[in-house]
Amino acid sequence: MPELWFNYANLLRENGSREEAEAAYRRALELNPKLAGAAVRLARFAYARADFEEAGRRYRQALEARPDHPDTLSSLGVVLKDLGRPQEAIACWQRALEIEPRHALSHANLGAMYRLMKDLPRAIEHLRTALEIEPRDASAATTLAHALLEMGRIGEAEALARGVVERAPQSGDGHLMLGFAAAHQARIEDAIAAFRAAHERAPESSVPLSNALFCSLYGEARDAAGLLGLARELAEKIVPAGPVRTQWRNDRDPERRLRLGFLSADLRRHPVGYFIEPILEHLDPAQFEVACYSTTVAPDEITARLKPHAALWRECGGLADERLVELIEADAVDVLLDLSGHTALNRVRALASKPAPVQALYIGYPGTTGMAAMDWIVADARVCPPGYERFYSERVARLAGSFWCYRPNPAAPEPGELPALRGGGVTFGSYNALSKLSDTTLRLWTRVLHAVPGSRLVLKALPFADAATREMTRRRFADAGMDSARLLIEPPTEPDRFLAEYRRVDIALDPAPYNGGTTTCEALWMGVPVVTLAGEAFFARMGASLMHNAGSPELVAASADEYVKIAAALAADIARLGDLRASLRARLAASPILDGPRAGRELGDACRTMWREWLTR
Image 1 (cartoon, rainbow, N blue to C red):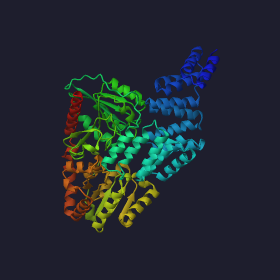
Image 2: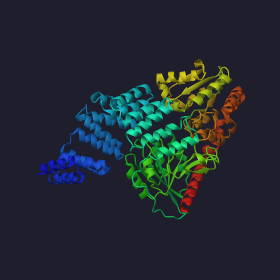
Image 3: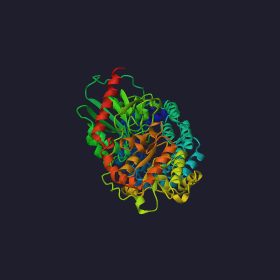
Image 4: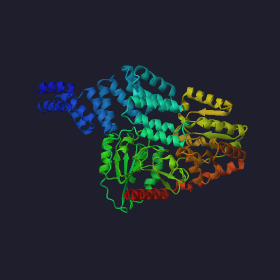
């Protein structure tokens, strides 16, 4: 009798009657709880509607009947990952491989998880094994391409992605990886075209749209007004995670204690994690209750350090966007601060559903989102001066000091002696991402070196681990007129030695239009002055904001000619460079950039103002 119900359920499923099929599978299991096939079918139905708890329960029921079934173990691992339980997921996949060492899906799942956990060597090992077993597995190939990109192996990654697209032209992930590879090499318009192609093939996904928008910040094809137009165009295509909320049950008292929500995948070892820590420490607990929604799947020691600063901490790494919306709404968050924007692992679909009455973008994304559901962007008067509001879809909430609050690495070495004093001329440097090295940047830096005879330029970035990318960059500089003998292009240094590399640099050159942020703070902390060119958009004024707040407004240029003039004059004044080397760290420590109490107070005041403004609508 149970088998008859099971077969009947299979017929119903094949004929498209999902509800009736699900009821029939349940009936089969009532008659025989050890009917593993029915439990697996119910698990798949539950997973499809994002009911991960039910899916996990059903897979476990199937495993009670067939404890050594690798496919079921692998599927349970996926559910556990989506429930935010990565170690249990890994255990499932490892158990599946103990049973069947060449279980391709478990190798692929382990590889994908290790990539998210930043264990790239193990990720690559498992993904290569998965492809040896199943050479045409497009998902494993694109995940391997992603891991290789994160190791700086751009040529290998692009070749893999091209192979996927050639075999399966409709693969959205294949085009997505082609976009990432192009972006890593500063081929910005190629990257945007690839991301658009990915979206055409997967219109329900917001990932290609966000990547196109983030990538567009690095390009020069659009001015600030053009970027706003693109942001609005692509943001309109984002499919909200369920109905868009227009009513909330929050208490409308303007002066009560507010619940501030912080949403991010980067509450971990990441610049956002470092910048947000002093803010969370110094928000007034009498005025604000902090709720953190961490969507990382790889929490670390920084995550653990941040947790005590939140009254409510939600691990949401595996939570579907629809469930995340329901959770934030149920928690009655008053002001939701998104720290991701269109960066990796963002939750723009959840934000588009407006789970909180007030939503604001803060520190994680240096531009406008274009999203109607995002009410505010938190800035300061230098990064968004009065009159520049026209470049944003959000309203601008200005802090009086710096919109960032930097916390230096306590293990940072002393700045050391000025390199120019050792002879060999002045050394300029930039440790910014290669994607920021626009044609404008190359022309600027070439002009600077021509203006300072005997100088050289040191570049460090992850993509320079790839020999072809180093050669491509040399050719780009040669086309701009740079003598390659004056150019040092190097892969990144180990994290524990990275800051010490600033002891080789006399003057840091900020890229344009996309300025440095964390890299600028690090350079200043190591006694290295930064010459920057101010533009119109948020990302093009970060250098101006930092240098003004650091007390060095004279290093902010308003034009390319002035940029070259400032850099050349600084290089000619060795005594001044020596003074800066000795004083910048103390000046930065005394500036608004490192003033945690000020930053917490000003953000709190801004949130209170946003809340009161919403109440008047």
